Image (cartoon, rainbow, N blue to C red; front, side, top):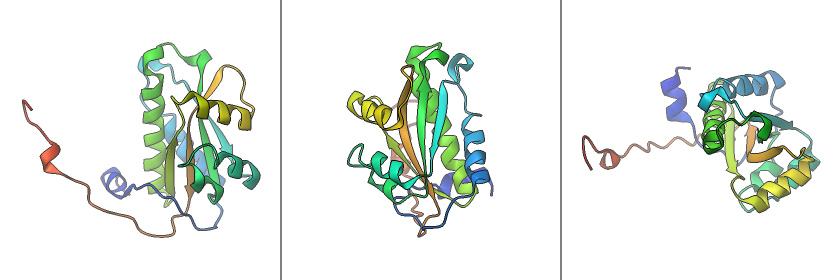
Length: 168
């Protein structure tokens, strides 16, 4: 699939088929994530892959929008390791770029994904830290559900009225 097509087809998927996701596909998504641009090449990201239904159920209760994790075959806890941060102001942008790469790679692999924010809400970050028993220097950035989508969700979102040339 061409990148243009993956960008156009990417949608948030909240319901999944029960089919397991091949580990090779998850690894391809994580490889894509780690190719993201990063301020001062700090690459603050780490990833915790969760396939166990018990932990996915716990993570699905972090906040009202994380419930799809309960039925997802794979969850990825997107993390920030403070020891890798060189530029405090940009680590969230770095990791957001990594997550975008994961989503696009997922589309290319025929997978559906859902990015659920955790940071900067300290309460939600603490919940994930406790559930996953994260070390002190590691913080949760987001949760990411992965699976085979149970339907086609494409909708053209282009809106020319949101584009401004030269001035507003």
